[in-house]
Image (cartoon, rainbow, N blue to C red; front, side, top):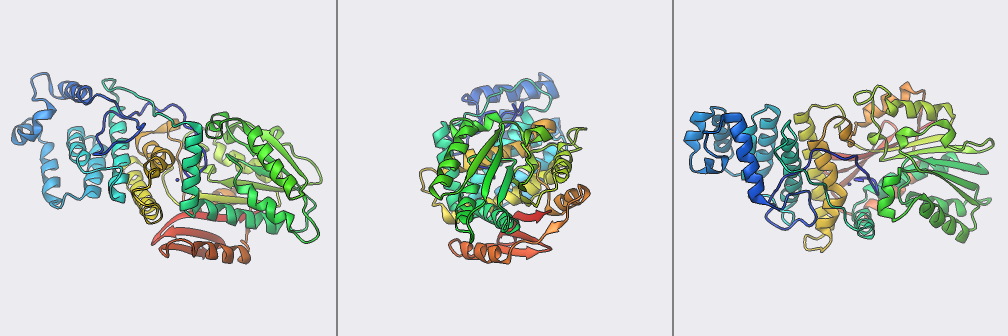
Length: 459
């Protein structure tokens, strides 16, 4: 889903994927072009682990019993295969991740070869997600202390193409609209009597969230306030825009002018975790709103850095005494979880995501593969393959976010009942399998029984 953000940037990740054959073309994927090279590298790994006289891994298909005699750990793989006679792809991928978690690398490699025959980026939702999960597993394996695999950086599409893919995802799935609408409703409610409004957006990306809010302010009884937006966005995220934050400012200024709304834009071209007080352009006499939409999970916390920017930024914002702070995040627990439980959580989360896309975006849609690959697959691979500072996708459940906000000195702010009703109306345009739940002052949007996005407000 960013990603769930309209544009995302990743630090160079050493966890790159060797060749994977998905059963159908995967344009621009993180794969090597030479299958023989990959097999050669597997033989090198086998020689390191088993000695130069062992049978090549490629011959294991015809020599399972010999392999088991050489390496008893393969017996566990045989038992796994006997326990899954239906060749269930999800269970095979889970078994592969478990083998990797247990450092049973040969079993993991064997299971990868089985999964490779079953995944397809143009198949059922589980096959499509399986392709990217498999890529993440192979990428993780290729980085496990060995330099014998090729490293290949993911190819980015042209900026205008990426922007187009993100727009398609925005239209076919309600997750972005849900998040933006709930946050904008909380801001509009908090600012209903204010004459000068300053909005600090910690992940402004294309600036799409503010289009509807500017329009809403223009219709406000008594006239619109003066609006100033501070947009924070690291320079590498400018790729999808095809330029810097000035593009966002000009677009929003033109919109505001057309609605006769007094408007200013302040660009802060930096990563959100780098922000200091002097970067925010605080002025007296302004009512302040701070927006964290699908962005806080990118900020490293105490488990990654002693600086703990995740909590530092919240304390900084609290010191500004804002009228309202909005939080929209994926409802997933991938921050500090060890690899295997993190893998299970990621699988469960994105399985619901891919199933929801399948209902709205036909499989034969010419851009569907690109939408999933460039807007979602990078997140999946990052969560599964990367560790430490290189793993930038670090979601937390809303309960944990609430603890962080309370520790920073915030108090919950109820969401607008009018906005909640509007969101329910919005969902009527989508599948009835989307579920909206209001609980403990927060809104949750999910697919069937799985919460996917949570939204709340603070002051």
